[in-house]
Image (cartoon, rainbow, N blue to C red; front, side, top):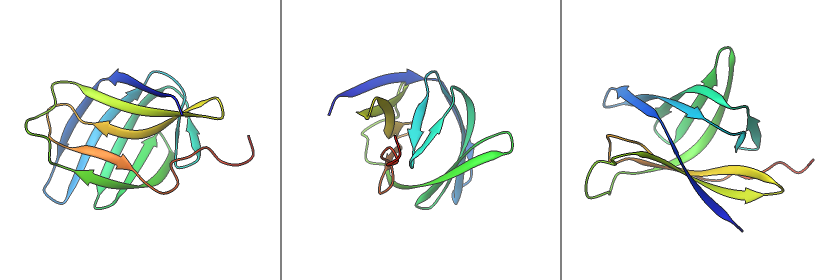
Length: 113
């Protein structure tokens, strides 16, 4: 599988229980089997689930949160896998935090493609 790292802009805010981020995908990206169009999204992290929303549309995806980076990330980095001709989000390192979201379970491209 090919992997590609892209840099995006992300802003963070939130509380100890939940975190909200703004992320912009510059290319179509697949999350939890759903292809997202390029654009700005709100990313709400609550425990082991992230809700990614744009306007009235939203999807949920299971994630594992890794906060073990030795220092805050200087830039947001998204690690993609490349499956069935599409970029699939695998991880997001969030700028200004030590947090990496690792997408687990249904992060692959759906079967009908």
